[in-house]
Image 1 (tube, rainbow, N blue to C red):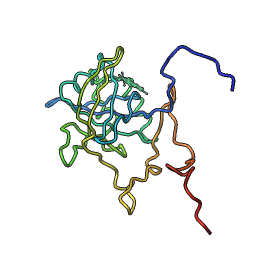
Image 2 (cartoon, rainbow, N blue to C red):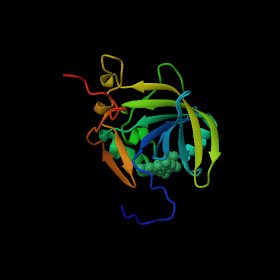
Image 3 (tube, protein in one colour):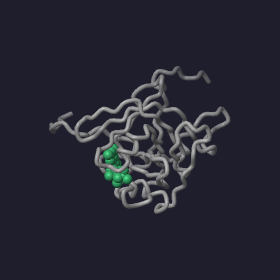
Image 4 (tube, rainbow, N blue to C red):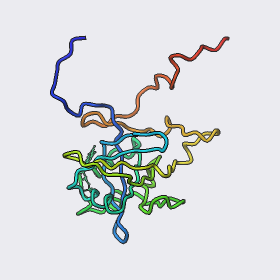
Length: 192
Ligand SMILES: Cc1cc2nc3c(=O)[nH]c(=O)nc-3n(C[C@H](O)[C@H](O)[C@H](O)COP(=O)(O)O)c2cc1C
């Protein structure tokens, strides 16, 4: 394959695009859209979000040490985009976009999840690493809340039903066709 070279950049794709909720005590909760996110450890379950220091949410998360990663469904795409354009300094995004703040039943964190998101991950900040343009908030995932309609009879999450979206260099994409499952390439074929 003939490949053209480019200087190093953020070409990694696809990425999740998530709606991160956060809240200072006594203030309105806020939402920031984040694409610089991922899983970085299995046990304990750890994630990160990288946030520019100038964002309104940055100081809230730094001060409270808590946030919720709310996964984005196709239906939430437009609201996800809007939460990534307007700042909570000026707008109450929960109210403006008709999103419901729901507090985790087991009080893992004191900030609300987004009720309309199919899957929400409650996170507690472990450390903050300044990287340049962004600060990386490494966090423990201390609780996960899933829309009951997505849970099958074996208590597994049916991700296919969640209609999650991904982000590719400025574009939002719906999930495509399922191509296989973990290990399918080496699994033995069942005898007929
Ligand atoms: C698709 C998308 C992805 C974004 N990803 C990030 C990100 O990873 N980190 C970040 O600091 N800002 C990111 N932003 C920008 C913030 O979401 C945006 O500046 C937002 O208005 C900040 O809200 P706040 O000021 O209420 O915290 C993204 C915006 C969009 C639309």
